Image (cartoon, rainbow, N blue to C red; front, side):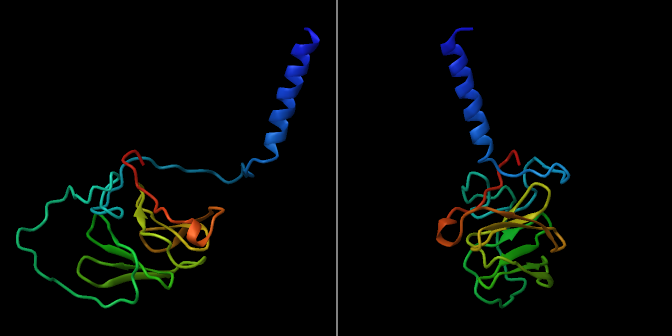
Length: 169
């Protein structure tokens, strides 16, 4: 090998080592489970579908009527509707509330890390996800238990985009 090739190889090796210092820490003892596929909610996110068209694949009644009414505190974002017709609402106070299709409160969970910075989303495995103003993405199980909390590295007004449940999960 000539000196130029050795120098180029050395520079590439140095660059790869230098960028490893900037990588995120990965704990191999913590298993990662990724569930893919379409969300099974009737309205899994704001504007209903991954394309945010505002159109539902579910047939709506011809003459809708009010079945129940529920008073809640400040709601700043659109709720989501799961496949059973239950509604999940994120309150400005940081509470997540699930109301059944017949209007009864199923559970209420307080999100650590602040209130929502956007509307919630239903993931393909049924997890309700919400980005908080504290810079976390919180995943709640269908029973209202915290499944995970992921730090996003941004906070407050930097978190303007809502998560999307894409068709491929």
